Image 1 (cartoon, rainbow, N blue to C red):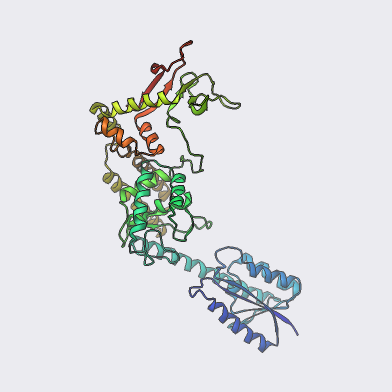
Image 2 (cartoon, helix red, strand yellow; image 1 turned 180 degrees about the vertical axis):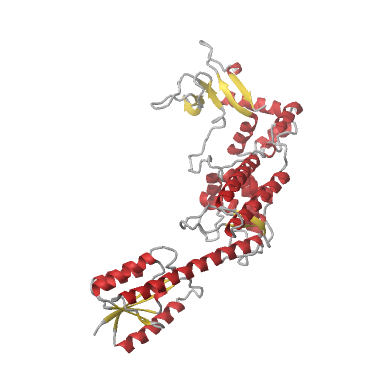
Length: 475
């Protein structure tokens, strides 16, 4: 008696219980009994599309069993359960010919792959199955875009952080965390430090796991948290998607942060030049501010003789001279006095403001939204063959460059936020300065100074000389 292998597959198990696969198996067992076949094994790929191109482990095991002579017949509910790719079909035909495999389907009966006519029928069925898959995928992409353009709720699975399972109701406690994180990132705090702090505070993600910088980045860049709908079409050439999609409309749910904040977060966190590799925290206030006046390289903090110093750290492989150092305590006190005096000057503050973009957040946001909407319309026009590919590419390049420029301007709007609370006189400066984290203090210095040169010491002078520090102001 011939032995048979039953192959079952369902590409989208919405019921979540494998019921579609179970029904296929039941029908195939009835077919096996009517043909007098003994079922050796059932091969199951559940919730896995043949069209996606992803590996199907059970299907590969089926082919191996066919080649090894372990089964002499293959039963499937329909030919499109076996394959929807012409390449897969040709491989299947070759194996069936070499091993004399009987192929039977429930509704269509036998599939004779031993004759040219039978193989032609199989290829025809395969071509139509492929067409059906591609047509279904195109309809799904168009439906996803339509839902996004109307701001509708879509998707299932795990609820987004900040919202309940209905994806509409805001969870106040989580919303407060999102607002805090958004503000601190806009002010320049690094994601790795925020992730560490959330873990220390015992603030979990939706799944209960610790925060990771990539999880934080994805959430804070999401248009969802500002009440906006994203659309990210599945690339036709593969399965890899971008971190975030394009914002195409206002959503039907309420936002937790403002739209302008989302635009600024995206400008900051999606900047290609941004370093996304976690680094060791910098422990010294003037790291990234002090520059050696001889070789013009950045100086670093190092303890020496029980005192902290900033040194030009020469080492094999770098271009530092190693000839400059300065005591940290008096240098930090002097720099702080310079900042305090500068921020007490209306003339200096006016000069700082004049260096910022002339447009406000709302103007930039309106411009950004308009360009993003035009980009979506352009893609729709190309899909509907209203414009040629050359026209689409030319217009897209201009729009993407303009969007990138606008996002860059968003990233430069934060100077006044960084200096908030420090511009109300020396006393207010001193009290507020003590409440700032080291990262925030360093951001304040970076907003005021481009760098501070440390010039060589006078030979024979063993006391701190304030004249050695030469500030290069932002204005």
